[in-house]
Length: 506
Image 1 (cartoon, rainbow, N blue to C red):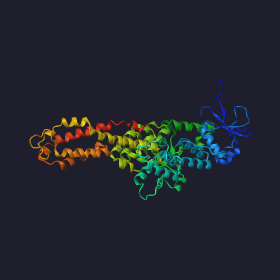
Image 2: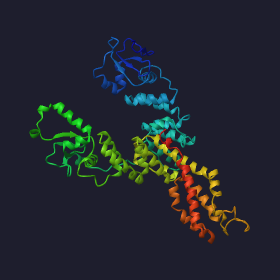
Image 3: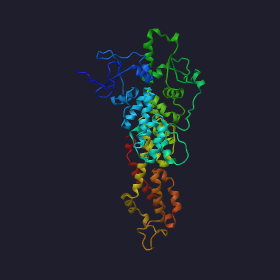
Image 4: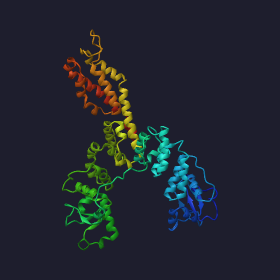
């Protein structure tokens, strides 16, 4: 069987005096014959690498080969900027992005500056793509230039570019805010929150102090001590934690293998120490959920995603089974954070539940709502949430011009009501609508288009009808009127519920 085909890159990366080979990742691997001295001067990353042993070439030459994940086009531009040769030409945003990503990874300041200048040349043509790349990498000056151009070209709302999948959603939120306030004097920082998000927790002094966990995790007969990153010691029983988690079982077995079963004596050495990469506020509820002493008194909604992450990491199936239903409480208290964090964890049912819950907010309220989770999740899911909200509003609006609405009105009995406030001539009331009805429809269309939640709209229906009804005939048939309104609202709700949630995942 023939091995892979290797091609030597173009000059100057084919020189015989080169002392190392960089091999690109694309299909037919390109060999770039380069000089260590140049790479070491251009990149602290390579300088550190060359102090380590380098693998030798399988083709029996004396030049070591280093495989890199970049394709040949990206690697060629990257190296040409480092070498004393003509400056290369970048013709696409994708190319500029790849070079910038590589420059930042390899800590090549000169290449980073070059790629940033190249990105600036695409601001006029593709401002949203440039903004996404700049914001992702913290290039605030370039992000501001691109944001201004994107707003001027009306290329923000409803515009999708693939780079949104890599940019923090918080950067997109700030771009939307900038679009709404571009004419005022507000100073915008696009790449990070205006104010740092402080998280409550133990002080650094407390974390350095070793302390024991509360009961029941202070047992004197414990045979395992689990130590968290904030230095709290949980004295637990091996039989309980290993029956709950195959991962903890493996970790303890590996300890025995490393030290040798014969070399460990519990009576003389004491309990085994198991270092855990979570903080105590995460480990404690996990242990409470697997211990026979019962469940935690409460689970903090803000900690729920981290608890689920840890439960999945340690394969605590019972804990996951208990925690997942509690996500509905998280949705009720903070639906936007719930949606974003469910997206990042692939929890499809919770994503849909959260997205539908957010229909109770107007689109403007949703766009103006900031949560810390926006900084931890890519823009893609956030963008798709806004699009889903819009489509539900559009579906609600379409109902009012639909045949379904006309059929519903034709089948109702309220048009036969002798209403002295109806726009009829006093002789026939068959096709006359009561006064309240037109106001009801106008209100429904206006409200549901921007806030497509029938359950929210329904809360004020009775109050509205009592206020709008202008005659005794309508009031005498209030049950029929309410039944019609309920059927009307059910029909709108059906149209909204038929909007596909697939948009949230594509």
